[in-house]
Image (tube, rainbow, N blue to C red; front, top):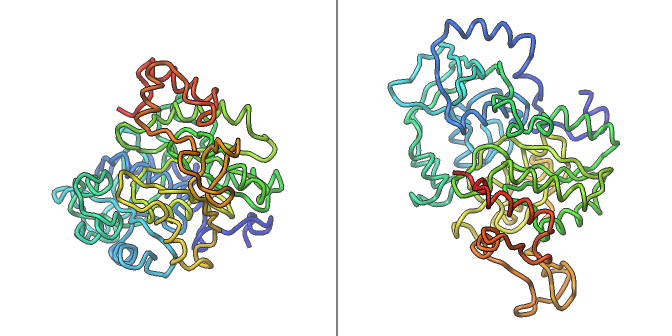
Length: 398
């Protein structure tokens, strides 16, 4: 039994070993070996995936997927061994870059840093006609996730990886190094705080009043809350990760109990795959040691590709025992003028025009004018961070 299991924490997904792919001492020898290996430069998404393979966030995977796992994930939402898994984790390359089986490749991050070494076990065609409609439920070229996969290489390279450099982000505030806890580290923190049940909150946006309400509700039933914003690759026009982290820091400092709240970051790339990505996010949070996972409206969605509660419905179709983490499903929430506080459709009757709702466009217009959104929509501390970023031209991913 692992130390974490002995301490009463949830086991890693699929019975995986969280520390299997990164060993700081072995990394020194790998770096020397890599100097003589063929070099392959990863995309930003692939670099994010490699960090999660290395830190245990993708347990039980030991490397980029082979064809059996790829097909099973697309068709059945499980790995070939039956473990729940909803998103393919692929190392796709152009045909001319395809290596031979048995070859070892030095994997470099987009910024040139040596990130790891892969031992090639399989090379197979990238079946995009299977992946795109299965994962994204659309083949629309305007969908950011589908468009990204369409542009990727036509050949997939599979095999176990060994990580040389776990975090390849620039060594500065934008790397969120003080918040960049591995699954082993979050588990250690949970154990130190004696948290037996932990709920994770996923976000790629600043936390507004509706999100805050959901987090507070979840805190009432769990020992602790992990606020776990995604800081890997996101699309142009999303709020920049460093701005989001500043806003989250300002909010948590004033409005959350530090004894029951932990903020860390998830170095994952967004797929914008809606329901499938919600399952993916839940699996990763289990690996980080969480027992519960908040699933709100249009989780991981984009545009109008997914129904408001499609992600919640998909959790009903997944083997809950296999998934191993409890989804907490929340309806659309907001500030009710009639009630005088935050409510959801479950806690207060729906009244036409009662909830204060602001469109993304309306919020942006206010921010760029230097005006705060209503206090019922956003805490002033959060609005101040966003206004400052808007004025500085750093609010959005470029």
